[in-house]
Length: 251
Image 1 (cartoon, rainbow, N blue to C red):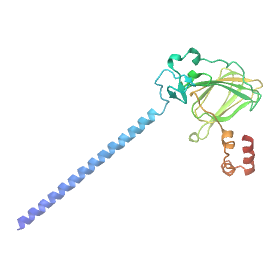
Image 2 (image 1 turned 30 degrees about the horizontal axis):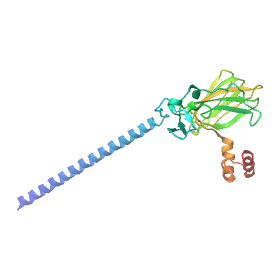
Image 3 (image 1 turned 120 degrees about the vertical axis):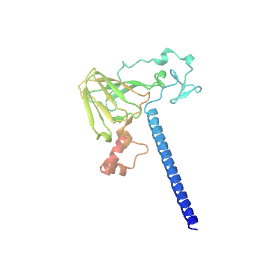
Image 4 (image 1 turned 90 degrees about the horizontal axis):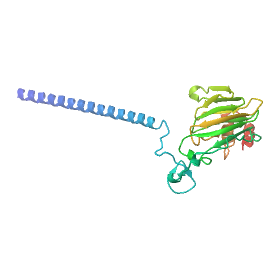
């Protein structure tokens, strides 16, 4: 009887040991699977960041914009039949003509966009001429879809941009003369002002066919409809009546 009981206890302990070992192996296997899935998720995330860190390449040589309403639709424009594309689709002129700086803040931008040069569509670039009267300026603004580079052709220009909060809102400024080049990073607030006594001329290029343009004053104080003045008064530590005055000016 004692031998039988001893055997039963031994079998029970052996069974428990086997169960613990099985549980341990199963737990180890699950842990390994979780590590594998986590690694896969990280790799996918990294791969996605690599894919979206630049504009995708076009799958065709060009997509000349057309007002026709059939064909391939890219970047808000239909593509012209490649057999009908001509040299003039990639050509324009007129940047030698000074812009009228007698209105507004004393500056005029002459942009070569898709409407003026249909061949620009999908190419990811644009070019413009900036004219500044003495004392004229281009007020603080941003380009949300592209960086901008300036080449001063004539005059003396004071330019600058402000970094994001990540870099402590650092201001970078420079006085530019003919032949000088300055770049403004995508999305950062920047400005250009002619502090000279003669007209200034700049040729500008951007890394987008439509970089966009958000003038800070117009966006904040001249939105449609207007932002609640109480919000702006608190945000900018201004008197409510001053906010209302600024909204009246910008709208």
